[in-house]
Image (cartoon, rainbow, N blue to C red):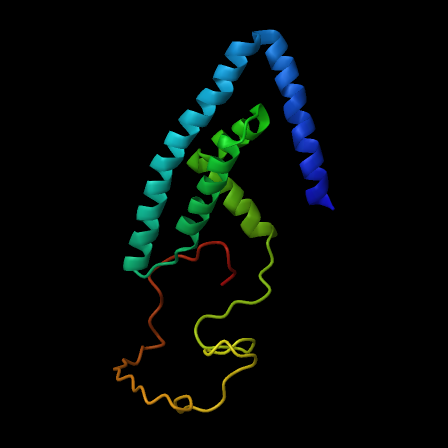
Length: 173
C-alpha cells in the first residue's frame, strides 16, 4: 500500500515543483536544469560506479566482506535511476545518494533497522537442489547416469584464528 502511495505522491510533488520553479525561473532555465542534472548525474554515476566496481573486485580478491561495496554499488545505481528521471525531488535525492558520507549514513541506518531472517553460506537447506528439482538432494553419490568425478584438495582451518576483517555492520556478530 505504501508503494502505491509513493507512486501517487512523488509525481504530485514533482509537478508542484515544476510549476513553482518554472514560474520563478521561466521555462528554458527550468528545462536546462533538469536536462543538465541528468547529464551531470549520468557522468557522476559512471565515475562512482566504476570506483564501486573496483572496490567490489578488490574485496573479492582479498576475500573480505563484500557487503559494503555491493551496497554502495546498489545505491549508486539507484541514484542513477533517480537522476535520469525528470524532476527536482528525484534529482535532489539522486545527487544526495552520490555523496559517499550520505550513502554510509543510509547504510548504517538500514543496518540498524533491518532484521536478518536467515543467512546461509554454502551447503543447502532445502528448497531447490543442484538439479533444480524440488527438495534437497540426498546421498553423496553422483546423479544417475552422471559419472563425473571432481578431484580436490582441502586444508583444515585452525578455529583459534580470528578473521582479519571487521564486520560490515549489516550482520550482528
